[in-house]
Image 1 (cartoon, rainbow, N blue to C red):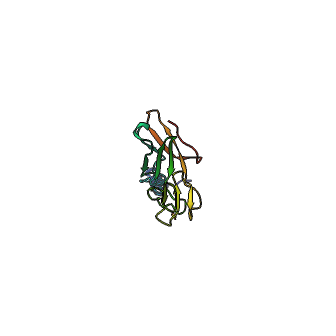
Image 2: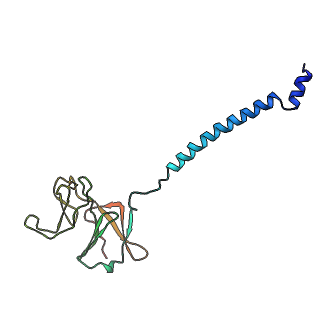
Length: 169
Ligand code: FES
């Protein structure tokens, strides 16, 4: 049986109301403490800086590159060769420890063809990416090069191709 004091206390919201309010504040604090870290984790999925070069690099139209020309793309570190047979895109990243290989130079006493020396440990590559002197363990990568709908060349470093791939134009 309810006493008149308890009845008055409930009517005014007494101890029960206070407990409910405190419980509500507790739950609210708990849930709020979960939201912050959850948002921080979601934010962590989207870094402020993208360190890798985008895989597709645009160049000019094929006519802008004379036969015999060599164009170095600094961002993706790719050499684009134009010769009588067409275009090819050869990585300039050494397969030993990823140094950027040096500029291509003419034949010399040791190598009877146009070649490049890696400045880090001396590997030598030809213009098709073939390694002629270690320590590089394998040939340079060759990437897809094509002509986009806008008539401009592009190189896609996410699409490695065979060593003999050339874009005929
Ligand atoms: S990084 Fe090129 S030879 Fe070592």
